[in-house]
Image (tube, rainbow, N blue to C red; front, side):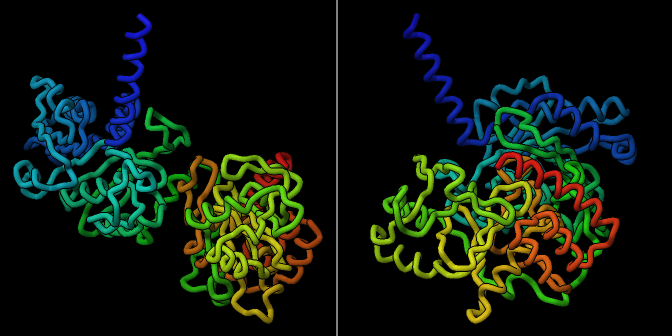
Length: 481
């Protein structure tokens, strides 16, 4: 009996690993119902009542999206033709022929199946929950850029979005998917979002901030209607799906200007983030040494201050009280890396609820992974620029902007992923930052935020809402510290 149980456990583990590699996570029926109810409305069916509505799910699994669509259409007096595609032959075989679904066993992204099932003019509705295949993991990586215009780290689910937009009727067709929330504003999916925006309008979305099913990623649902005269969002950023539901305020008075008159952050600093090579290169040299540059990880950065030596930290699966890097233990390449970074700079934490930055005016620290560093371009005024950058990032305005740029990209629903390219685009305030720098150096974080908002010219109403939002998060951070 024990042996049978062990065999069952191994089989279940293998099945789970196979599902993960294929991104095969079945959608709970309540979520299917919510998406279908939003998309298959009376108007959608009424204008197609004289013919069967053409519906495609390019990753159909057990067909539950398709059968739910049919029920919704028939309740409204219409009829359907259902097409389901799936790469898994056993899944396709399990769909009972009585369900009335035309099935195709194929990798939908391959495209060889399309001509045999695509109706003239395209599908009226493309719907489903496509595979989630992170390109950060070797087991699910495609090994390069997307064939549909995305970058090398674009999740496969965004490729299915692009595919759906190619197959849907360009004149009134609808596209509705459940996707990982990261697709809403991830940089590598930007071209896909912009192409969809150019041809459609997002008319419905849903987001809860919860992990809705076994995929163990936070998801959202989005729906688009295509039309030649679509008036969708032209910036290719869908972070509003998250920000509008999580209480992030707007700052239209500051960040909807066409071009900031004082330039951008990237005009004054070089922004850099360490990656895998630097991480592994540091490991032999990190320890609770008596001397050496302190190692500053994201967990040691709070708004306006470093918690090095105050808060223990884990690095490379080890716990340290006050980690330093023994530069003598680094190889030649990492030694050059360290020398180039022991200069005045600002360190910015990653995966945080608001921007958290700390100034290193003396160039004493070394950044961990995935800390983002800002190095002043003008060596003669490096210290002053570093303090200015640290102050402007320690503000409601900067954090609100960051959420509207990258809302939904964090590992959790309440965090954002920041990067050098994104931060370089932050507008520089038109007003003076001198008083804000003074407040920051005195440890008056809230006062610094108020003064930076004033330097940005935030209106009184917008400042009140952004300050309320930002200060509540700041209070939680300070209690945690």
